[in-house]
Image (cartoon, rainbow, N blue to C red; front, side, top):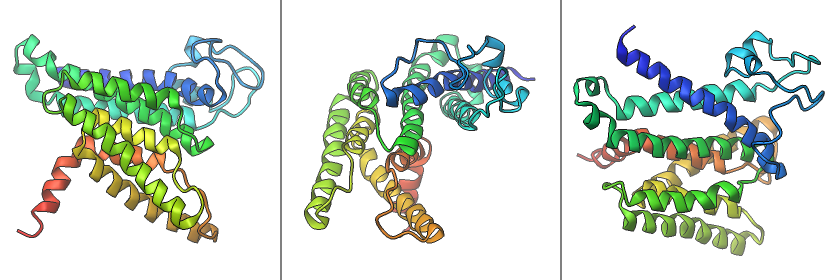
Length: 273
């Protein structure tokens, strides 16, 4: 196994281990519970989960998806979140540390790229938590999005290709654009169509990714939401009042922007040429 593959494996394991903690956040945050106490336990029998039953992905497979104590079925969400976060961490590693980085001087190789990796890793972890909470509860916790806006703005001072002004405009453009859309929809339809959580989430995305990401994220998330929403309504034979959380579509578009945004935008602009 080459050194690069070992590093990549470590990146995946890092994401999966953090994903285990994200599961705790997903389960407890909507209920206002602490994410650090009490320790992880079975929600039915209160069996305190031992370390060997808390190994990401592997413990779920070893236990057959059931609690060791009472046999209650464990939600597939747990290994799914761990695997998803592991893959996101791996993708960020490949993005910022291509194989050539092994030939660079240690400080040069691990300096700025490591910082970018850490910032976007934290950002993606927040998106994973928001996505799964919004899917189940149709809420986006302010405890994630509001601090996220502040953190995104602060780190922009240390990211030259973003910069504090770009981040600040992103916050205003992100939150303001969805606020305007929500206001127009409410004025026309006489009902709420966009939650305040979505507005704060897009402001957080603008803080981390800059204002240039906003139009891309709005367009792609709207496209994904429309396609999936229409498909679900057709399958379930529901009318247009079917409530579909928008946060996961915003999160998906933001992740797509991180990895392929510039490539897609350039492809689109060059279509005519």
